[in-house]
Length: 444
Image (tube, rainbow, N blue to C red; front, side, top):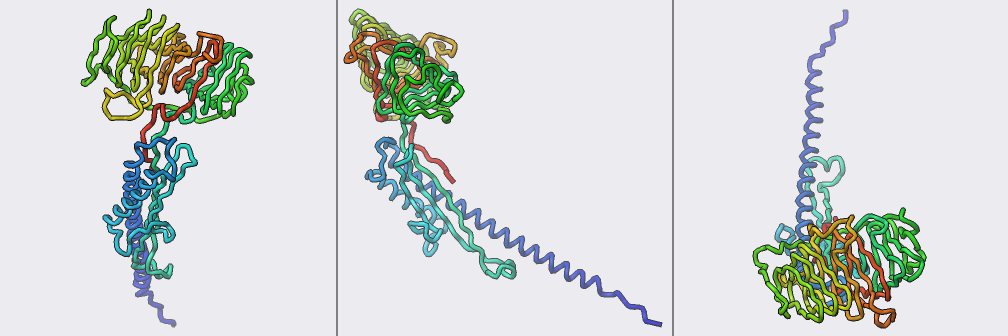
C-alpha cells in the first residue's frame, strides 16, 4: 500500500505568495502616492510662479493700450524682465532655490520663459513656467529599472494690455435680428480704419448710396449673403460671417449713489459741474459747457435750434432719459482719456452711456435712446454705449460732402440705425474709445 501524501504546509506557500503580491501592490501604491503628491506640489509651484510673474508684468502694462503695445516698447520690455524675476523669486520661496532654481529658459524643462506677441489681437505677454522634480521610489525601481521618477509640469498665464471695446469695429449691434445694424435708404457711410459688426445680421435698404468699411462681421449667416440682408452689393469691404457674438460688461452707475452730488441748473447756467442732473434742453443759441467728469442724468438732454453743447473729458451717463441732438445744434464733446479711479472723473473712453435699466430702452421701441442727426458742426469723440437701446445717427444739414458730419466715435447699441443725407464719415481711433482693463488669463 502506498503511503497517503500529506498536503500540510501548502497554505503557507499560498500565504507567502499572496503576502508578496500584497506587499508589492502596497509598495507600488505608496510610490504612486508619493509621485502624485510631488506632482501636485510641483503644479502648485508652477501656477503660483506664473501668476506672480503675470501680476508683476500687469502692473507695468495696465496703463498701456493694445494699440500702443509693441514688443519693442520700453514698458513692455520692463514688464517682461519683472515677470521673469517675480516668477523665479516665487518659485525660490517655495523651495526651488539653489541647484533647483528655475532657469530663464525652458531648455531643461525647468525654468521660466517670458515671450511677447504683438501680432495677435489682442496682443499679449506669455509667462510660462515649467517645473521638474524627481521622486525616489521604494519598490517601483524593481520594475522600471530607475531609482527615481521624474515629474514635469507647466503653467502658462497670459497678460493682456488694455483693449478697446470691440477692437477694430466702429459700429457694433448687440441684437440678434437681421436688421440689428440697419442702413436705411439712400445713405452714404464710410468707416475709416475700422469695421461694422452685428450679433445678428446687417441690412441695407435701398440700392442707392454706398457703405464702405474695412470689414463687416456678422453672426447670423442666414440673413443673406455673408449675413447681409437687402442690397448686400452696396456694402464695400471684407465680409466675415459666423463670427462669435460680442458682449460687454462695463460697470453701471447709480446716479443717486453717495459721492455723486445733485447739481441744479437753470436757463442762466452756462457751466455745469460734474454730478447728478435732471436733464436740459438747449435751443435759441443757448450755450452750455460741461466741466470735465461724470454727468449723471435722470432726464432727457436735447440740443436743437442752434443750441450749443461743449465739454472735454466728459461722460454723459443716462440712468433715465435719452440724448437727442437734432437740427442746427453745435456740439463738441469728448470722453475722458484716462482712468483715474474716481467715479466723478467719468469713464475712460465712454462719451454717452445709456443704463441697461433705463426705461427709455426697449427692443420693440422705434424711438432711439441716442438720436444724433449731425451736421458739419457736430464733433463727438468717444464710445456711445446703449446695450439695451437703439442708436440712430446720420446727417441732414447739407448735400455738400465737404459739410458732411464726421465722427471719431464708436457706436455700440442693441440696435444701430443710420439714415439721412449727406454722407457720414466715422474714423476709428482706438485711443479715444472705451477700454476693457488689462487682464490675466490662466491659459494652461
